[in-house]
Length: 162
Figure (cartoon, rainbow, N blue to C red):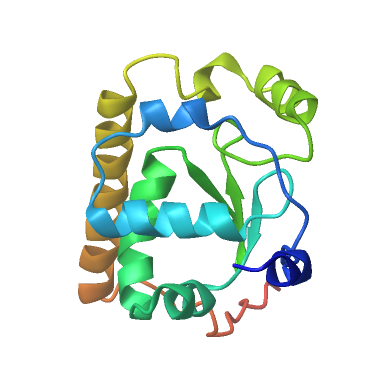
């Protein structure tokens, strides 16, 4: 590599700082969930915000969208990612990157004790939360198969009271 090539190289964005000690508290996840987490860590803005839809994440990883949709609940159950809204995800402050170390220290100190990754048994907590997700998914599927689910887009009519 010549010096002129090295001088031309410019990082694609500001370099962020992160202490990723929180990764020591990542439970056993499916490989796709790990891959998704690492990709999200490379795409984050300062403070851990990831602005990307499932389709964009899938494109960035050369995966199908369904694989992202199946991996994301694992990251949420492990408390590594919070879904802010469609296309907006927040990485946990203990694994997020910041502009400087003090920003991360403040963000971690502001966490309620129960939200820290290093408190309690992270494996058991992950398994409990993921089972709750599976139970809720099964409950919704059962209700839908029985016809007990009203479509969100279907307008509800109020009965007139005389």
